[in-house]
Length: 596
Image 1: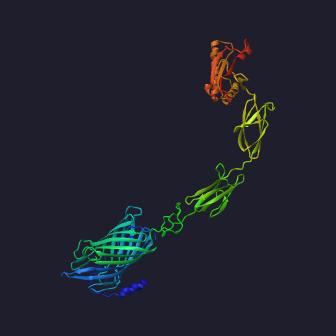
Image 2: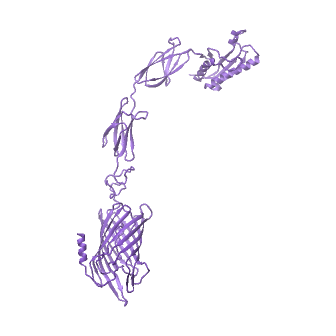
Image 3: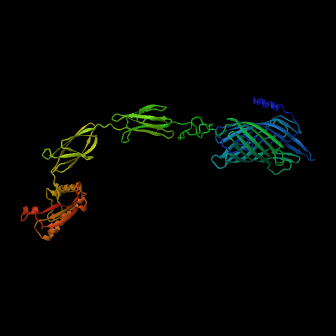
């Protein structure tokens, strides 16, 4: 139907006389602007965003010719024209075009009806003012000689337009400036020179409330070769306002006038338009993806790093982990997810995809107590839903028997768990214990204490048989009584290995009884040899015992070595039996802290 209308308009033209083949219409509606009607802006529209407009405009006296005699002739006195314009954003480029419809023209050469020069355009945005303080774009236009009229409303040949566009937001308003070169066929008529032209536009648009906008634009042009008195420097002012009648359609009206003389600057211009242009800011679900790009316009995007540009929420990748107390996965655990929009069940380690919601997670496994907890699936990055199960504890039974080296029960023997020293048991007693690793401490008067370690299984029975050795050291109120002698190499302070076990027990006794604050370690010799040498030897032997004990973690400041030589014999006389008794090391308690 549109082509039928255009063909009919072309066939209905009324031809006037001869006229220069130039386009006296300075006004060409912009097919890509978002805030103005004549001035292009650098806005990078969303991909696949399209708009279209029909503009009806009237110009009074756009082409007044002053002849050699000084008479002024209105070659084009009135123009009523329409414009079909539109375009679409395809990736980085906006492409579109415009087709003028000359509904009626008037002037000295007659009136006509037909088509104007059609054009196709492409705009590339280098900087978008959404991401930069200013926007920067380049617009290229090819104009085809499709005009079917003879009056000065067509170029009479192919033309081109190349324009640089700069714009800048100022609050909610947008200010744009265009500077371009329009290539047109050269024309000469008496003193009129018409050729390639420089065109400048300055426009601003601002919202008036939620649905209305206002614009103000100034456009001028001049011959590239310089100012020409006949063609003039036409400058025109256009003011307009637009109102969005429905979501995707707005209507506009405008009026303007020429600010200077010159071909194309009318005395009066009036404009009315209807434009299909979906609003750029509509985002019904508030997810930051405009509705024109949003595949899910009522469901907000979840911004989880996966396909965030499509406007649709993606389910969260959820791993259900059922763990034991030690934090390891319980592989044979089963679980259920209930109470939310998508119930599920599975085994530990399963992976699900779920949208954000709250659930009740329950799990069980052989040997573990069933557990339940509230969990929340969050929209966004992958997450683990963790539920920890406690092991079911079945106590085991422990029996401790305590005997001596002759396999006889030890009277007054006692034992207790190292981790629970307050609960003491008699030898042969039984006790219920939690499964796991344990240590039992066994003591009896006159015997060396022992610590025995063992593992108790769940529900199992463990018999611990402890054989106590006779004690080599006895702690009394005044001294440490040793049941054997400490042997040294003859005439030296080097301890013989057969005394190591005895001294180990001395060290253990002192470590276990820190209430003993000070012990005097006395060294004694027999009466053979020089007395002074014997005193020095006995002091060295007492010091050797101190060194042995400190190496076994007994604090040195608790030990006071003293050597008496032969001065304090136990028995009088001579002979090996007497000498062996007098050669000795004694341990006397000097300082003891009272205990409750």
